[in-house]
Figure 1 (cartoon, helix red, strand yellow):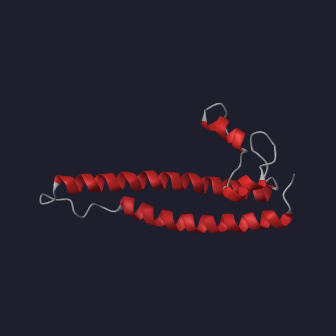
Figure 2 (cartoon, rainbow, N blue to C red):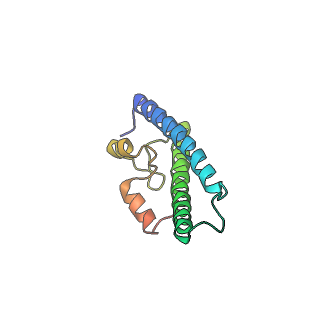
Figure 3 (tube, helix red, strand yellow):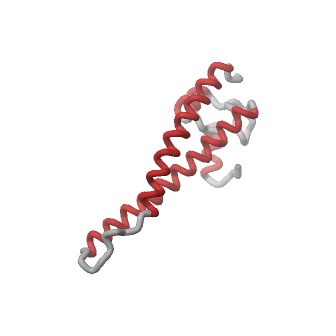
Length: 123
């Protein structure tokens, strides 16, 4: 079942809001990751250095995941422009409304997403 125009407009607003929030969050995260380690020096305890390294690695991992979600949001917005939003990129089947409500940037059905994550499909 194709999405109604009102539904697509609702999802577009949600996606735009998500994109703005994520972009703002990423700006802060990338500044934190790129920030030089002001505390580095001979007086710093090794445990403090280990904690700083862990925090930096965690920030990098979160930033990487946020960039992936941002890429998916951009793809969903692109699909809105192509008038294919709500249609699976892989199978061409409609993506259920419940899935889009939960994950508005979804571009695949759950079944296709599972196969993709298992390495059985490529985007």
